[in-house]
Image (cartoon, rainbow, N blue to C red; front, side):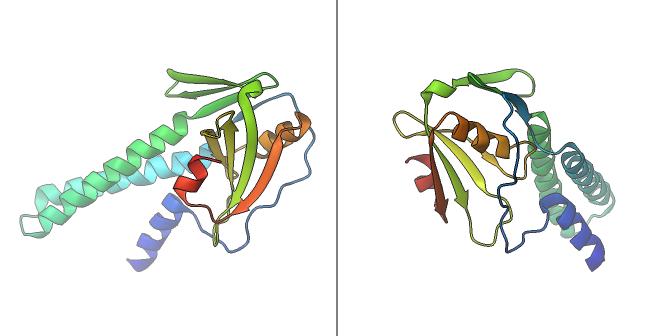
Length: 180
């Protein structure tokens, strides 16, 4: 049973390692799409759906005090399922003039590259992926990406091509990440 739980947690959250991602040697491209890896996201959707189904089934047939625990686990599974669907629908279309982000193929936001002042690459201790955050003229974070997303490093390459200020930082809090 312990191995089953470990496998489920590994599928849902992945493994964190001590060495962060390094920027690969990539060629500049003027158009690309940044999104979450499809296979990993689909595995999370399936795993969370299985968790919800199993504990819903157990909730129906078990009548003791543990029934409330199953209800809590079902609600947590539903939250994981919703977040996985959210990640699956995320798509960011980037070209040399704009960044166009969409969720669920409906909610769109466009940011012009000329409005971007700075790009931060933030490393967190004991985390594998780095955070790439883009800031507007007033120093507010307008969008951020993780390097475990597909094509995320092309954002840094495009920022270098556009001669934007690049900052490499380490261990920032969410409040520090929100503003320059």
